[in-house]
Structure formats: C-alpha cells, structure tokens
Image 1: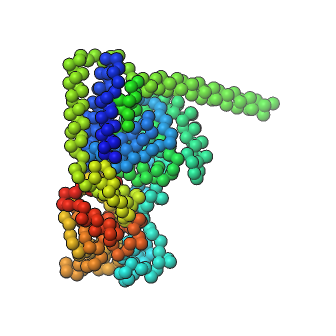
Image 2: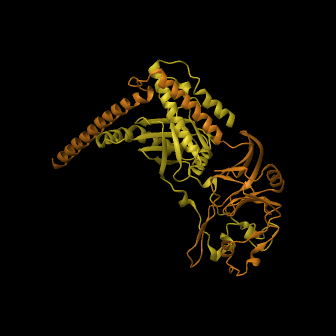
Image 3: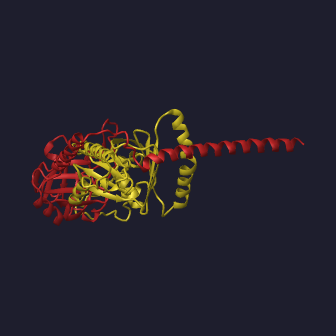
Length: 235
Length: 219
C-alpha cells in the first residue's frame, strides 16, 4: 500500500506538458496539496483524503494509507473547494449517542466485560445462554449520515442498496434536485459558500466503517482535481 | 358561490406558490450550473509565473514528497482496525501477518456517587511500543472493582492478578497494552476496556516481530 501510494504521488510529477499557465496552475495546486499532506502527516493523528473524482477515500497517518474505501457513486455541487485542510465540525449523529452505560447495580447482565462475569476464569461463562454483549460495534454504526466540515462543506454518506434504500434514495433526490438549488440562492444572498458532496456505497458495512473511522475533529483534504490534466492528481 | 370563491383563491395561491418555487428552482439551478463550470475546468489564465519561479516550485514539491516519505514508519509496524477487530503486522506497506483481536467496548462506566467516569475506548492515532513484558501481572485499576460492584482494595498488593494477560504484554502508553486473553472465543468482538487482546499464537508472533519503538497505528 505504501509503495503504491508513493508511486501515485510520483505520478503527480510526471504529468504531460500542458500550456505554461496551466502547468503553473497545476504545479501550484500540487504544492498546496503536498503542503497540506505534509502538515497533516507531521501530527500523530489519523486524517482523511477524499479523492472525489476517483471515488476513493483514504484514511492516513504519517503519509501512509491505513485503510481505503471505494465509493460506488459520488456527486458534488455548490462552490469549488480549494486544496487545503478541512476540519470536521460535527456529524449529524454523534458516536457518543451510541454508547451503552454500564449499570453497576446489575453487573450480572450488563457487565460489558465478559472477563469479569462469574468466577470461572477459564472463560466458560456459566450464564452463557443469557449473555448479551453490550458494546458499540460496527453493526451499530449508521449507514446514512452527514459530516459537516468547516467552510460550509457537507458530506452526505449513504448506501443506495439494502434495507430502506428506496426511502434513502428518494430523500437524496429531493435534497439534490429541490433543496440544493434553493440553498444556492440562499448562499448567494448571504454571500457565503456551500459545497455538498454525496458519497454512496453499495455495501452498508463500508459506510458504517467510515463512520467508525471518522473521529471527532478529524482533519481531511478534499481532492477534486479541477485541472484538465487529470493525471496530475491521479490516485 | 362562497365555496367557489374560496376554491379560486386557494388555487391562485397554490399556483403562485408553485410558480415562485419553480422560478426559485430555476434560478438555483442556474447558480449551481455556473459554479459547476468552475469544477469542470480550472481557470489558470490569471496565473503569471516565470520559468524560474516554476522550477523553484517544482523543486519545493519534490522536497515535500521526500519530507512526507521520511515521516512514514521504518521497518515493521502494527495497524489496528478496531471496527473489524483486526490487527495487521506490516512491513513497507505489505501485510506480513493478520490477527483477530478484541478492542474496546466503547461503553461508559460512571462511579456510583462519585465523580469519575470511564469510557472504554481503544485510543486512536499513532503510538509506539513503550515496553515489553513477559508473563505480565494485571494490576487491577479502580474501574475493575467498581464495575464488579466490589470495594476498592486499600493495599496495592491486593490488586495484582496473574495469568490473565497471556504470555506477553506490549505497553503503548497510558495503561494500554496489546496482551493475551483467556477468552479467545470473544476475539473478533469489541469487549475490552481499551486494551487490545490477541490469541496466544498471534501474541507470540507479534511480540517476536516488534521491538521497543515499533509504531502502532490504531483507527
């Protein structure tokens, strides 16, 4: 993964020879991208790279890719986004809302650590039949949610197949075709910016895993590659 | 007559509203289409850069790639996916061993009548192996007693519990360890208080492959 990532980075430098203005523009954009990447890689925190046009999302740390997601459909609308670092301001569903509180008074049932159930240290739980694991796990994560970044950017993550897909797809269509045009007028009147990105997965587990991985205040780079020379930012 | 008039007024209001919405939608679409044009093709016409500056910028970009590369871990490192409960031992980006783990339950424990609260998450981010222990002893923290509804012992020696953490433990700070478990049937589930549990064979392999300073990336 690490080699392919640097190979991809290398690709950004072997783009074809465009017109001088365009070459300068692309080099400037590359510089912004690398500056942002370097700034994030210097910190011990995980960060994200959303390669919007290539429909890929990378979870990274120290310049290496920890995990990769392949989206099925990606749409975007609103104001163009510069190559810079963005921070997650909030999610519409909080991870903390999904947590269970351990009831100390009734730890025979609610004790979340099966190590501590009963006296049997061999691991065979005498109450095995009754035991229900209370923990926040991947299956508990939402399959449809919104990430709000600074700069008026919202990233809507969803699955377009599986349970409730008709309702989700209808909601998405209404948002896309009815709400966002009105939102565009509103933002023009207010003279602020808004960008809406819609990322859709086939497999709901992928959407859930992304929710899991996006920590509070996570930082990210959104790569749209506006230039005609797409290869320059190929990932 | 009155009924017909009300109906007529309602129809006019509805038609006006619909027209207003449609006009707004049209204007909105026009604004979005204008913005979309910027997405399609960047306008670099205003950029005025001489060759010397361009070359300097290209050199700077090459330097940045080298700098980023320098930050990447050298040799073997560990990646932990707490959602999939999987640990990867990697070298130069390639997986050399994969193991099923148990990561933090994410549950919350509040001390009854007290001020302390614990959240049993496995920490995320970059860490490194700070110490390696053979046949580790678990010094039970306060939360373990509170969770079991027991009194917290006054003597430190009463907290020691042997043979519960497996053969080895790799500490990565703030009391968090990669260690073994008696409860191998729960591997693959989020059940711990934040530590990372491994099966016996995997623990031996991970312990052998890692050294003090081995990087651990958790997400």
